[in-house]
Image 1: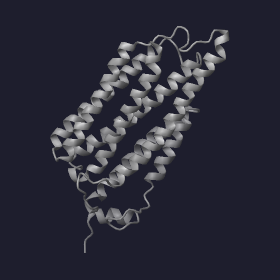
Image 2 (image 1 turned 90 degrees about the vertical axis):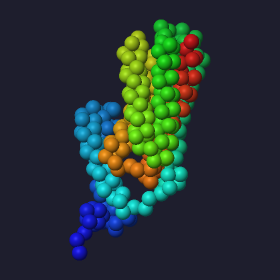
Image 3 (image 1 turned 120 degrees about the vertical axis):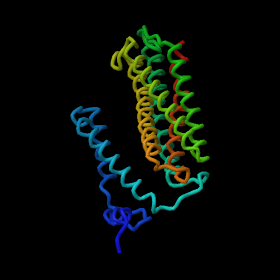
Image 4 (image 1 turned 60 degrees about the vertical axis):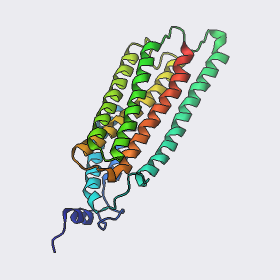
Length: 266
């Protein structure tokens, strides 16, 4: 009896069709790639190895997953599956990470004002002036992308693939515009991360958020590619919902960051 391509794929990775346990090297390769990328922050040649490996491993992992979808049970679009619950835990861990960076911001602020104030230390540092108008526009852009993401998710859950895709592409476009404007802000900031404690705290916190926006854009682009290939019907809404949850989290963090970092500088 001939085996289907899905069954062959399942057998190749040591699992029964419809099962979850497999021996694919993709998760291990992805972990190794992320480790190399993080190491690249200290020793840049590691990032040169990590980035292409990350692209390869994620592409391999996605292809394996999509290939197995036909044999997996479908869900009602309103049901929460593994992807949505996994995203909840991811967001919880991300909250802890951002909390530590915000704690560093407040500690550096307190130390600068309380201890360095006697020798002329100020917060923000002397000479630092943020373009609040530009940052305000960028905030509107990012929040607008969140609104489009919300509509995209609703359209997808309703089975409107065309409408979902249009709103999704709008989300990606606005998210990309946000990063471009933030890069422009960095290049015209007038100070560097190592000029003073304020610079270190500012670039660390806003840079961490920018990195999350980039990750979100990659995830949205993957969703877009799956939609374009017809691989993501409304019955597979769980993964779609998970990505939108992540994007809304990124929006929420930026609102908090804008209130704490930028409005204080006015």
